[in-house]
Length: 188
Image 1 (spheres, rainbow, N blue to C red):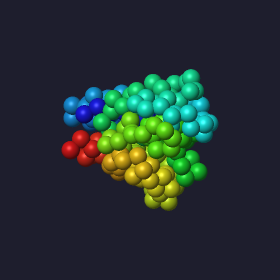
Image 2: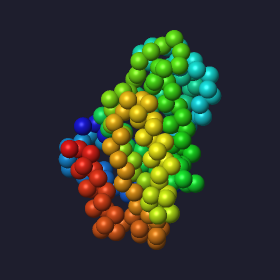
Image 3: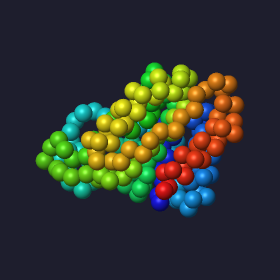
Image 4: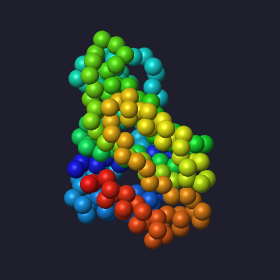
């Protein structure tokens, strides 16, 4: 299985990155091929809503020249896309939001082009947050579930850990084993 982890935290070595470690270790043990992409050090412009990507078949087609085209290539390579992000104000961090907004070119539903460049892929969430889990993550989960339904992706679920003691919260045996168990559930 090809697994793409899009790490959306602006802190490259923060809580979300720490939670990704046991998840990736388990994925590798299960034989997955993993690509880990930090979004905060990439140039990902916001979607302009120009719809030019909707006029070209078989390619992403966004006219903006930034790192999104490389990310799209990795999305197309992947069988499973894992969105790893802290939850800020009940939604993902800004670098992840730009990637999600730029999904338009993967779905050709709004112009002369047709088809999908990613239908059938699986998507899962790995999140960190401050509030209690359901209260913190439900708005983001709902948004991703709708994106998956609209894009004909298979939503595979969420694993999240609440920040109670900063980085130490994500290094507990419970947090690490939960991330590993989630990884195993996605491989099956």
